[in-house]
Image (tube, rainbow, N blue to C red; front, side):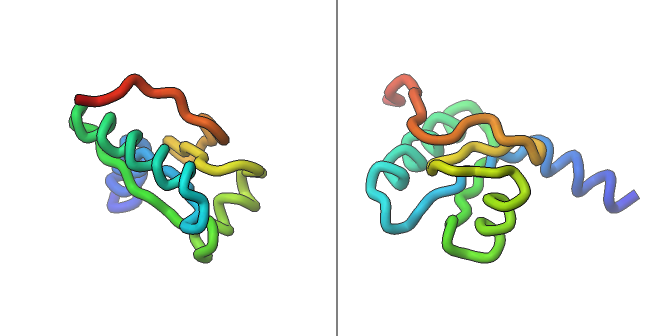
Length: 86
């Protein structure tokens, strides 16, 4: 039962994989975070240099950051196009 609860939380969470040494990756993550929060969505940043980030890279075959993961699936990698959030 606990697994089901965790799984539904994971499905609703947006994970953005970033590189802490890439300014454009960090900027895209900031804009995505603002966009998600303005819509009441949960978002979490994960560093590509940390073990969790490395795990996503290997499991999903990610080649570019930022990468967006929802429900354990790779949705986007590389440049993120979002409307500006005011």
